Image (cartoon, rainbow, N blue to C red; front, side, top):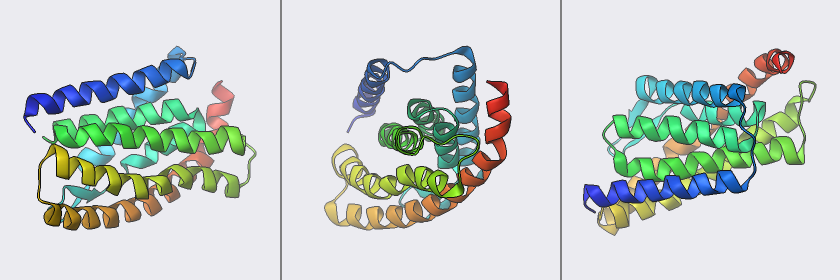
Length: 205
């Protein structure tokens, strides 16, 4: 696919997500916007400077998703989704992978929305919650990503990049392995950071 069409598709994806954000009636205060920006920056740094490339699939081991989930736990799913989508899509673009930014934006937003839903709608976690509901909430979005990442990755590689199906199958399997490991690591770190920060954040509200 020509690079111009990739950028057009990316803009359409971002626009669609923004429409969803508006329809969700999420209230954005200055504090919340600042937190989203900070977490997006941390996601970007965690991926751009501390990732470990895995094979030739474009996959890597990193902790960028940690801050998507952490934001969802501390605030809400929309905020978490935006933090991860902005930070990690920007990291893909800066790394020279605008095609990857398309699926990254979608996938990270889904992670945030899912973890936020379980954290604040299902378990209604607060600064006194036990570790089990926190852990389930953190893991929920990341576990879903284990399935959605290979699915959208196949679509991207096959129909956006135009790669042969045989090669795409190999790349998707490699990517799925990295995604699973990232899920385990990001879940652990998100839980630890949330446990450390939740009371501090609550006092500042």
